[in-house]
Image (cartoon, rainbow, N blue to C red):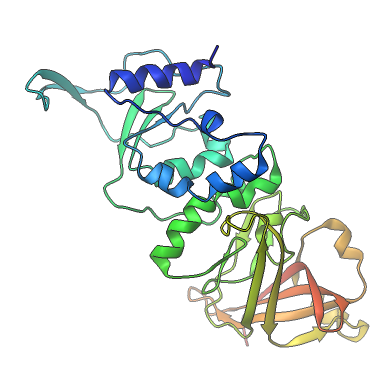
Length: 327
C-alpha cells in the first residue's frame, strides 16, 4: 500500500482534474546512483514546469499524509466566485499569512527548499490551514544560508539538494557555479558558526560544513580569484555534488610566525574543525584589508587561515576577522 501522503496526493490530483503526478520517491530510483544523478539535473524543470506542487508541511514523514480539513483560525470574509466552467463557488479572504508557520516539519528538510522556491504554484498543508501560494515571477531570490539550517539524511547531498536552484541562478545571474560558490561572488569568505566540517566538498567550499555558515561581504577585495575548477561526482550533474576542486588565488600571504603571534591574538578565529586550531604551520591570506563599516567608520579585516600541503598548495582550515577604528 502506498504511504498516506502519496495517497492524498493522488486524491487531490484527481480532484483538481489532472492526469499525471510526479512523486520523487517513486519516479526516481532511490537505490540507483546513476538514475538519481540524472534526475537531479532536471529537478529545476520538474518543479518549474509543474502545474502545482503539494507540500505536506507538518508531516514528519510520508506516512502522515495531508492534515484533515479544519476551520481557519483567522478572521475571513467569504465571497461568491464564478468558476471557469460557469459554475459558482466561494472564496475566503483572510489577512496575509506567512508562507511557513514556525514548527512545520518541512522547514527543516533540505530537499524541500528548491521545490518551494522553483514551483510556480504551491498548496501548503500547514498547521493553521491549507494555503495557496502563487509565484508571479519566474524566479525568487534565495538567501545563501537557507540550506545550512535544514537537515539532510545524507550530508553529502547538500549540493545536490541545491542543484535546481543553482541552475536557475546561473542563468539569472549569468555566472558560473562552483561547489556552492559563485565566480563573481564573495568566494571563500565564509566562517562556520561551529567548527564542524566534512570531506564531502573542497576545503574552500562551505558545502562541507555541518553547521550554519556566515558569509562576509567583500566590498574591497585585496585577493583575486584567478582560476577555479571542480570535478562533479557525476559528469552530467555539474550543479550537484563534487569529488574535488581547486581554487587559485593571488593575494598577500603571510606565515604565522612566532614573531607575529601577538598581532594575530587580537583577531577572531573561526576554525573549520576544532583540531585545526593546534596546527602550527599556518598561513594567512588577506581577503579584504580595507572593508569599511559605513555605520561607525571602523575597518573590517578578513583573512583565510591555511595550512601547507605542498609547494604552492594549501588547504583552507578557517577564517580570521578583526575590526578596528583605523586603517
